[in-house]
Image (cartoon, rainbow, N blue to C red):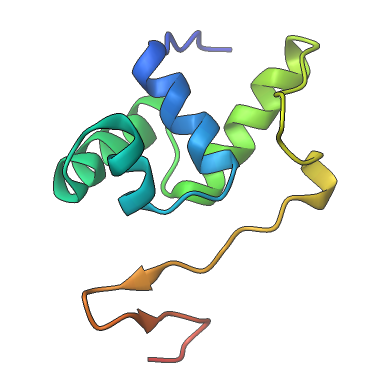
Length: 99
């Protein structure tokens, strides 16, 4: 198993993602612009070896479980519901095959 070293910013992003925060709200809470946050999130996904938010959150919960910790204020993994993400300024919603 590869050891992935995550820093404080990575951990904060993962915690906010796990709480269902949008890119915009993560950016606001961390003091970045939304575009900058997207770049940081994609860098985090690459570091973790995952392709999207859902996989990153699952990775995070798996690490917490391995460490015998439960993230404070986060739902149980079984109850985790990933929110749909809006696309663009118009707020179009992407759902399995719809546009």
